[in-house]
Image 1 (cartoon, helix red, strand yellow):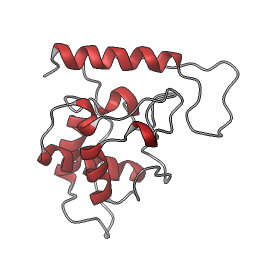
Image 2: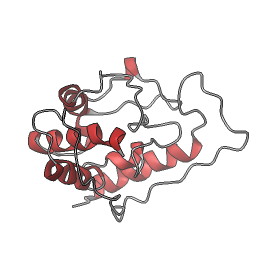
Image 3: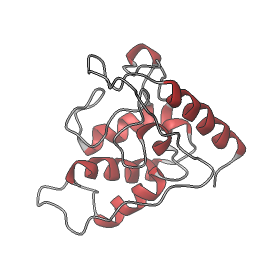
Image 4: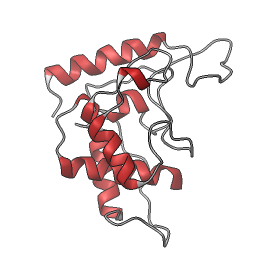
Length: 159
């Protein structure tokens, strides 16, 4: 459920996204950057679901858990506001979660879960706006939901 506080947080971040210039430190930027502002009033549609997993899948990662995590990522978890509906990051705010570059973890399922739970403090921020990631992304998801989001984020590089 999107509460007034979540809506206000999402709209504030979306406004900041519209002003962002750089996606990553040191990357060349287009001459006329454009940023899509995330609409947090209605959660976005989910991407096509995975139909199979590789043989070396981490413990706790299943197709069902990934689907659950995607719903949370695109809904009450508010992850999409900064990381985009496809996980590729909103310009100047959230990191791209679909590639093999991990700024604050090693990209493993357990480290992604720890990162979601603890956030990214202002002293470690690497985005153009200097915006920190609050613990749980500023949402009120529980530990089980954090694990599901971590499974989904882990799976993004498979798509």
